[in-house]
Length: 238
Image (cartoon, rainbow, N blue to C red; front, side, top):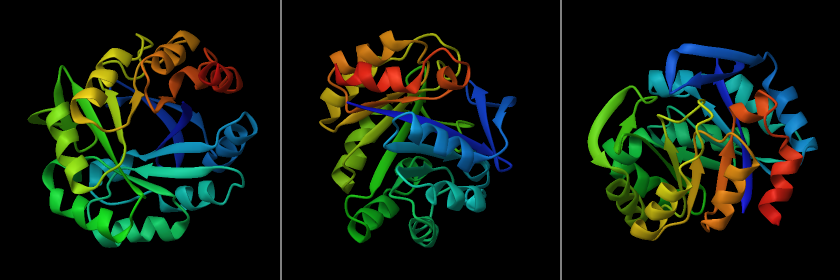
């Protein structure tokens, strides 16, 4: 199982939000590339980058920061946030991004997901963010009335090979990851799932491993010193 550290970007800085609330922001690093290099040194083989400004705007915003992160040797980068057109997807892949993570598009533009999967095979993933069972889009600001399993089945049929599931209500709150919900989603949709949101300790990493998940994304717990990335990588491999 893969442990994937997260870098969330607002204004070119590394931040974390509480429950996806843009008004509850903490800045953890001014230099995203430096932070990415630190994560690589600690064992990251894949870095999860979210352009939060892009998610809000509807197009990629923090391109300079993304380019700098991609230039760091030793780790692949997956990027989500504001990727809602083929030209924008192509643009970030040309910057060095390995995987794109489509969230809002997975709900509103399933045709775009199909086109992207056909044009960039193996490089398209889907981010499914939910609060109280309802999938959220546009940087978690808008509800959809859809359940996570329904969206996961749709994107799988469109060609997506992996889903990243975030319980928005847990994100940044240290309440524990929803490993059980992610495993249920994996079983119901028949697609590999990476869990995110609420990771507080190595027990959460072990819970995701025990649930048979493809991976777990760790963010605030790393920045607050609750988990050392090297320890999390070891726990995932036990």
